[in-house]
Amino acid sequence: MKTIIPSEVATELRAKLVNAPAGLQIVPMASSDGVLPEMNDAEIFLYHYSLKPDIIPRLISAVPALRWIHSVSAGVDHLLCHELVESSIVFTNSVGAHAPSIAESAMGMLLFVVKHLGEHWDAQKVHRWQKTQNNELCGKTIGIIGLGHVGLELARRAKAFGMRVVATKRRPNPVADVDQVWGPEDLSHLLAEADYVVMCAALTEETRGMIGEAELRQMKATAYFVNIARGALVLEEPLLRALRERWIAGACLDVFTQEPLPPENPFWDLPNVFITPHNSATTPQLMGRALDIFVGNLKRYQEGERLMNVVDKKRGY
Image (cartoon, rainbow, N blue to C red; front, side, top):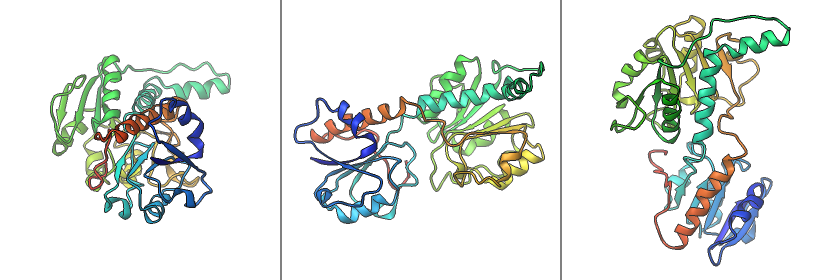
């Protein structure tokens, strides 16, 4: 059971493989490596951010024995090349591993806004004692677009803060910690009611550009827009206009259509925008959780069981 793994996680992964499945053979791959001869009969490939996405079609072409690819990321829209989608290779991801950190980051953004923490930090740097009129999250409404693992973790945390939680979900069944669940066709209800709209949806052909001018104009003028999912879910020109013309109060953005965000991009200079560099998930604990999912699936693969977190390659998640 030959398995190609990125060199960057080799040490941490080997520590988790003390009870490795019998016959497991590890072949490390550095970011500078191509497809090496010793990889030709590998069955499994673990994808990591350190490798460029184009390694996937190259491996599929060069390694005919490949049967399963696992990604340490949760969002896999950037990895779903034609070769993978049209192949019989099973594709799994690490959905769930990122959820605790991203949910905490989203709550941190809300606290940053409601408690004016940026203003206090700026005042401290110039030794200015400056009070602000703070607000509270308790009693406010958070609207979560997409109730996957991240959305559910965020709902739990928001409810603990005393917030009313509303959400959209592809199948709008009742969910714990969520006061109202609508289907995607009822997004307008969420936008009209939420004080904070948080994007947690997966990026698919159906959701690409789902937030544009019409949707932003449905939000309250006092509401904040938060995107910790994917930049391409939102049309950025209408969002810029909404922020400049104050259709909405402000935005907290971790993701953009172009990353890194170019220095000349106008989002940087808007006074009602807080930017983080697509690292809402990044913590020392993240990779351990992602590798735990992979190790659990290794045992399932060896025993012929259905793998966890299988991606629907046609849907994109």
